[in-house]
Image 1 (cartoon, rainbow, N blue to C red):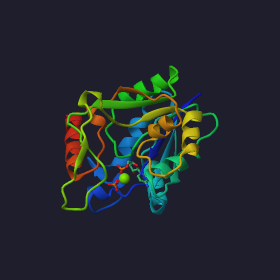
Image 2: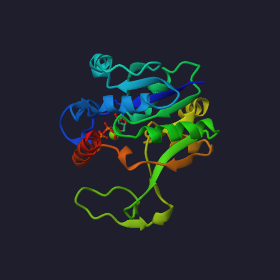
Image 3: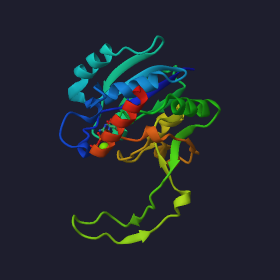
Image 4: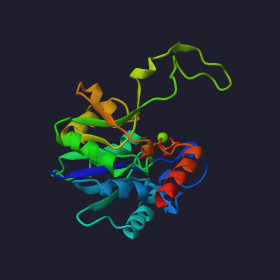
Length: 236
Ligand code: CTP
Ligand code: MG
């Protein structure tokens, strides 16, 4: 069965600062979303890319993707997103045809993911893992707090998890289609920041494969500077 990629791109990018929705911001002169779609469309066995766009920008995103057609054998589709990432992914999943067996969910905000990472995730799902997540060891020590403090107030620390046992996760996260659909249907809130978390809550095993430094998420202004530098290095 073919694989499909769902690309949530309906966020506002508030942490990046004022401007267009994050997925439409340029990187090397091309919208971030176009980079992300290209990266996924190049993946082995990917036959369909579903872009989940801001509802107000549907027409704009459709014409943008028409200007950047996918490689032969890959279809692309644009649907409207929702108020949270989880809702946007759910709306993207609803657009998948029955024939799709493997689904990769990839943030538009990770425009520079190498195709090797995409293929490693797909291959691990095809080898039988129901849920696969690219991940890297964390470099900062991480502290847990009981709840976010009021602005300007110091926050009491409640724990320091052993760093060697922590991983920072990336996308694309890959799934057996039925598993991911069931996980989204079983979800009791709309606030999950990754899809694998919903699968874990069903009691289904999630496994990690090596992520890639260049699959980092563009979240804050400094990330955009880094992304421009990585892209410039590739183009030399
Ligand atoms: N996303 C989405 N629909 C939403 C919110 C987020 O499709 N309602 C997508 C974003 O477009 C992004 C991915 O989920 O590709 C990861 O989200 P994040 O990095 O948080 O992006 P934004 O929500 O756009 O940024 P911010 O939280 O800073 O506003
Ligand atoms: Mg967000």
